[in-house]
Amino acid sequence: MTVDRRARLGLRTLVLAYLTVLLLVPVGLVFYRTFEHGLAPVWESITTPAAVHAFWLTIEIALIAVPLNTIFGVIAALALVRGRFRGKAVVDALISLPFALSPVVIGLALLLVYGRGGWVSLPFQVIFSLPGMVLATVFVSLPFVAREVVPVLREIGDEQEQAAATLGASRWQAFWRITLPAIRWGVAYGVVLTTARAIGEFGAVSIVSGRIAGQTQTLTLLVEQRFQNFDFAGAYAASALLGLIAIATLLAMTLLKPRKDTP
Amino acid sequence: MAALLARSTDGGLDTFWNAVTSRQAVSALELSVWTSLAVAGFNAVAGTATAWVLVRDDFRGKALLNTLIDLPFALPTIVVGIILLALVGPASPVGIHAIATTWAILMALAFVTLPFVVRSVQPVVHELDREMEEAAASLGAGSWAIFRRVVLPNLTPAILSGAAMSFARAVGEFGSVVLVAGNIPFHTQLASVYIFGQVESDDPIGAAAVAVVLLLVSLAVLLAIGVAARWGSRHDR
Image (cartoon, rainbow over all chains, first blue to last red; front, side):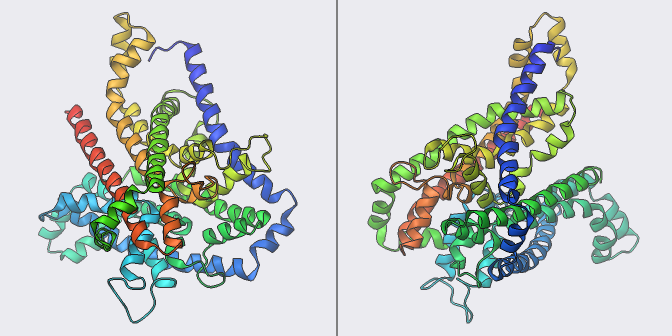
């Protein structure tokens, strides 16, 4: 557009001011507050037994939830793009439902199904223990892989798979040798997003975990508990750790994006 | 989800209705809806401007800025809450104390929904045919007329779907607002925090009733996004 120079600079200034005030200054401030007294107290506060336990619990949940969602996401994407079945539009809408739902509502729904007096009673405890937290995490991060893989599958079409079939490849061989290599960057991108969401989930996990320190407390729950106990330095330190994970996520996204966009 | 629907009426329809229409629940739902609408409207303008600058403008650090747009998606919501506490809490370095006010809620929601409109409008601006704008200019249209008559109609479906996604996310947002909203009934109590409180005080049925209303709002928005997407693809043809 032939906008004159003044309008262009004006708009640029406005946008930069908006992003600076809302995004850059607040995020920078938390890192400043965390490290203003040096590294030693930060290191101390993220290596307390409760913090270490919360860290490994968070990793453990992510290690279970992410592979589950990856496998489900690829299968769901294949079904949505290649499959023909009734109610496909409904399934399509349902898969993105977790994005539109409040995490609190998701946590509550799980509580009503698996909790005390709920619909399903299993021989082991679900609510207030690991299985419930994994379920909540799987639920909230369900759509990412499928959402990333669907457009890639549409883009590549199924001609190569058909060619493989005419050459005598089984469907399994065609998937491993043709489809999977073609969608691998899309899958990887979805996995990064799933991992970030799994590590950062708070609302749903907060409801189903019972927040027992040293047992069912993840990193995000630790941040909240420290804040409620007026341990602000500790809350900042745990937040900064989560912030570093988020920045690593952004880096991974930036590295994967060009590969994903050129299948 | 089915359980949520079924159990919300465990105590009969009367109990359901009473839980949903209790003054505190209504006020919490109203606050959630209007703050989310306000933030969606704000994002429609700010997000479109940001997308425009990121595609058409050129300056040092643009690539870095483009990457940072996704930061609100990558940051855990509770960390966003801590960030806002550091900025406008009791130890605010800029002297603004906004905790337990509507401003804190609006800031938290604007932060977590920042990428939606930018990311939905950006590819459309990228694909825009500059020749259309040049043709309009050669016919004597000013910048504003070109924007309003040529550019904006092309962007509208993407802006609407981005704003709808912002709304859907904001209306159920919990982690980023739980620390800063203050949770004062009739004043800064949001629907999600109200539901959480009901669960904590061992009233899951009352919580489920309000959750169902929130669920219906989310479903309506999902449908609206679907309609907007179809409308957008019709414009493509």
